[in-house]
Every structure is written in structure tokens, then in C-alpha cells.
Length: 60
View 1: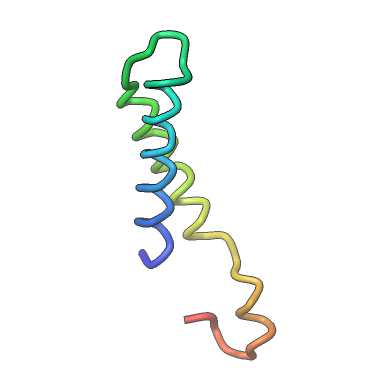
View 2: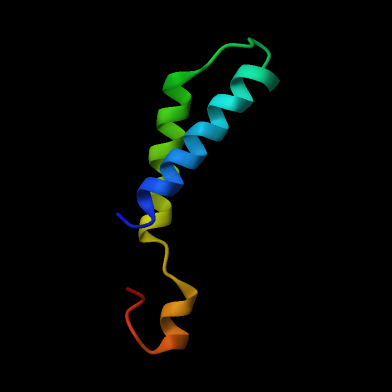
């Protein structure tokens, strides 16, 4: 949960900004933002932390 929420929120917000001002429709695409945010949050949560191996701990 430590990495999931900030990543999911940041990516969803970035997607909303992109679809509103840089997209062809110039409208907020909420479904795309939620989907991309959740997928990227899951990937960030399960991706191994490089610092965990160097510190000798479990990365928590």
C-alpha cells in the first residue's frame, strides 16, 4: 500500500491532465484514468525494490 496509492493517484491525475488539455477530445476521460492508475499502482506495488537487496533487509 505504501507505493500503490501515490503511484496510482499520480498516474491517474497525469492521465486526466493529458486527456483534458492534450487529447483530441479535450474532455476528462475518467475511465481511462482510473484503469491506468490502478494498473500502474499494482505494478509499482509488486515491483521489487532495488534498495532492498543492498541494505540487507526486506525493504520496509
